[in-house]
Image (cartoon, rainbow over all chains, first blue to last red; front, side, top):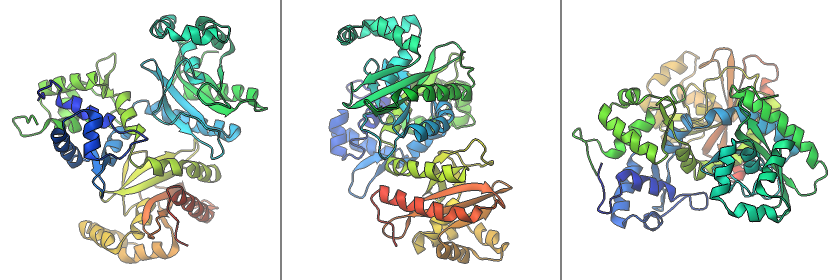
Length: 252
Length: 252
């Protein structure tokens, strides 16, 4: 493998180039791509040329580059978590057609919530989550519903790596372990306006046969909405359907 | 760039590895990955190791590898055609909730139809299209609806590169140019059971301000279904909404 003088491999540099794009910056000049990726400009130019040639990047008329449709195609065709997303989509639609608010499917990834799929209603309240976005575990109903239904050692590891959670939960008169136990007892997690004021997140785990969470299904509703509590059984029923769709028999 | 003795660049090999996965083979042993990609086994092992380290591939407990969630995340976050897909999703849902059949959004890419998004109803008829799959242009209503609303030179280039289309359309007593003109006059394309017997594809273009197709919106319904014709205005209205959603004013 060709290594640069700094010891980075070619693959390191390709990954850093791909990482430089996001939903706020989907199109970049090669110059800003070099700055964002920390790769020397001449190397960036050469690499971008090769990536464009392979269809992994596309060059627009104004010279800016963005991820290529070919790259999307390669990934979407055998996308990780595709089975889960495909099984979940009809249920997300069902939930959204009843609740009329953002409806989301997420998984735990590297101590964070990774949003896999999201349906938005045009009149939905504001919400930070978007497809492929990451959210903090202990500030979201999606994250807490999954962590509460994870193995005890996963919970303890999380707590050890995030000492700030104790302070966070002390403010609401509960400690973190009790908060998780409560979510577990209730079967769902609810947070009022932690990330977005005026909104409440409600989420339930999608449970595997083992009783552990495979994913979470959640909605974001205006805080204080009258039928808020009625959302929970809708989510629970849909989560069971999703589990069945990926070949898991949800625990009784 | 490090080239192998055969002259392939490192990036060539990475792309060939990614291309080896698809929806029928989302998990591969490193041996079969080497065979499918045509890369020497030792090189494949080394490359897979590095790709796993970067999260672009994931190794399962049984040693098989598949695309990594990190790769999906990088691509989904700033995915090409993401604006189009996001603008289209609510309209796809609207169409599907009325028609209760597969509803699809596609674009023209390299003389083929690339399916960007697809909603399936659980009781839908069989259909070959799936997200990120490619379909032939002249055998699908999606393809024909886009080609009919493309610039004259795009149509002629397609016809020149695909001499088989004349024979294909001669069988239905129309030549290819007349078939395109007819789709253009009607504003939609319809095909009975070309790819899947017993099904009919109906599609309309999503038109840019220029009058050319940005994308196509289509459904697959059982052939001979009673309300088939009623689908067309539903699709046309939804296509206008999608065009508006990406900042195009659909032509009157």
